[in-house]
Structure formats: C-alpha cells, structure tokens
Image (cartoon, rainbow, N blue to C red; front, top):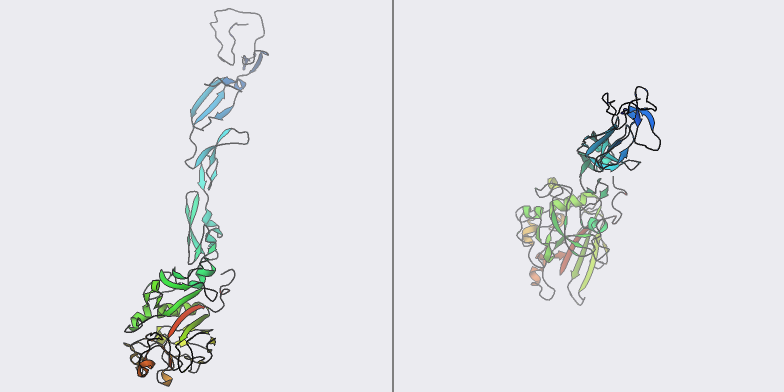
Length: 406
C-alpha cells in the first residue's frame, strides 16, 4: 500500500508519495484513514471525518455549531473546519438550546426560527386592551402593542377603572381623604369645553363620610353681579373655599346617577334663640339642561337636623319640575335676581320670589344688615341666614357604580 494514504487530515491521495510503498491495510474506495484517534486507527467514510477548529478544539464530522455570540457559523465537513458569518434576525438574540448550545432565538413578541422572526399580532385578540368591553383600542408595534384607553379606564390593558367625575370618585377609587382642591374630569361637555376636560373643584373628604363636591359657598358678595353665562360656566377661588360650581357641571353631575344635595346652614341668634348650625339633605336633586333654563327637580323635601325651619326652599308642587335659574341679566318674571341684589338662584316665582336664596350675599351674625334689607341677602325659609354651604354627592355613595362597572 502507499505510505501516503488518504486520511481525514488530507482526504486527497498523494500519487507522488516520496516514501514508496509499505505493508499494511489500505482503505477501500470512498473511505479514508481516520487519524484523529491514534489509539484505534480505522477507515471511515470521508464525510464522517472530524476536524479541529481555529481554537484547537476537536469536532466530530458533519457537526455544525455557532460561536458563543452567534456571529460565526462553523462547519466540520470532510475533515475540514469551515466558518462563515452568521446573522440572527434583527428581532432575535443569541440564546442557548436545550443542550446549552448557542442558538438564535426570536425576541419576546415575535415567533420564528431566529432568522425569520414575525411580530405577534396581539391586537387580533379582543381581550387585549379589553377591546371587546370597549375599554380601549389596540395598536400593534413590532413585538408589542399599545393601548389607548377610553374614558376612565387605565392600566397596561385598560383593566383599571379610575374615574374622576367628582369628589366621590376621588375618595372611593383614588383614596383621597383630605379636604382640598382637586382636579376632576367630567365625562360630558361643559362650559364650551370637551368631555373629560380638567376642572378644579373643592372636595370635603373629612366630614360626613367624605366624597362631597362643593357646589356653592361664599363669605361675601361673590355671587352678586354675575351674568347668566358666568353662572353656567362657574366661578370662584376654590383655594379660598369660595365659588359656584357652574350650571353646566351641576347639570352633568346630577344626571350621571342619582345625586343628593346637602345644605349646611348657620342661623344667627334671633328673638332669644341662640345661633345654631343645622343641615338638611335633598336625597334626590337634579338640574335639567339649558333648554329648561336649568330648572331644578326635587321630588322630596330635605331631611336632617333642620327642624325649626324644616325645608325652607322646596315649597312648590314637588311632583313637577321646579323653577329655572334666574340672574340679573336673564331675570324671571318677578325680577327676583334684582330683588336679591343681582345674585342668581332658582327662585320660586309661584310665590313671589319664594322662600329661599342660598346664593344670596353673605353677612356675619355679629354684623347683620338692617332689618329692612335682611330679606334681600342670604335667605332660607323666609328668614335671613348667616351662612350656607351646598355640596353634591351620589345618593347611593359609596355603592353608586355597578360592580364591576360595564
């Protein structure tokens, strides 16, 4: 046999071997001498020949493998080590397989073989962003998605209900327990502004179980000389706890769900009766829209500690809508706003100007106006009143929303 046989290291038979012939075994055609294992020299098909890579590591024949960073593809073929550049998909990374060998793996949010990675269509699933329930809309991005939550829905998948319609929401859903000025987002148009616009309100959170939205309060003459438009839009300085919420917002809030109106009243000492603070709550209070001039609906008299004067306002036929809202520039037939020094209120013109004006100009009990003028100031039950604070809250508070909300 030739002294220069074909081997795994050199599969080409050298026809010009300088060593001449020697005695021994010669591999059949198609086989070569496997000299990678010197302890047991055998003849193997050339394609089974192992090889040594550039780092001196031995590999069996026909093995392919990636470098540790997946950038080089290695091949052991016919006893020879080859390599070529390898490129994972733009949306893949270099990971390891079950045998802890380097492998291209598609990024989270993609599927494929690591070289061709396709973005998962998350938005095709109606549960994403709670699209089926109308909580939001879904937009696909490469390997991901974004939710555009509607209304008061929030969270990664619009799964959190976080309404900010009034102070009750801030107490119940957001855990705000301190009195002060907060921002709400009424889900309706008001004062020429779109739904969900920001508006500042004063919230009473520490008294009477909290969640009260201040509707009206003053310490002087803030309510005087305000136009009908002013009363629609609202005005005041809530940081000073004075202001008028606005007819548009009051209409919207009282039509979201059943709403109560709480009156906190201060009666000045009179005729031997000492000064007293009382309260009276209208369980159901609704203000209709501008087509009715924001007329008020009060189906029941108020109830509370106000006993001597009882209900000093709602004395019309309560089975029917009450009076509309009058201001000095849009007065009623009795010129009631003018009579009450240009303040705005729901005056009961079925009985002259009615028995109450809780937006009347304020005075202090130790500095009351002349008796002849007292019935043109803050007024309740046909008598002057030292102070009045008006607040709104859902009637069924705190269980006023469906659980869970639809």
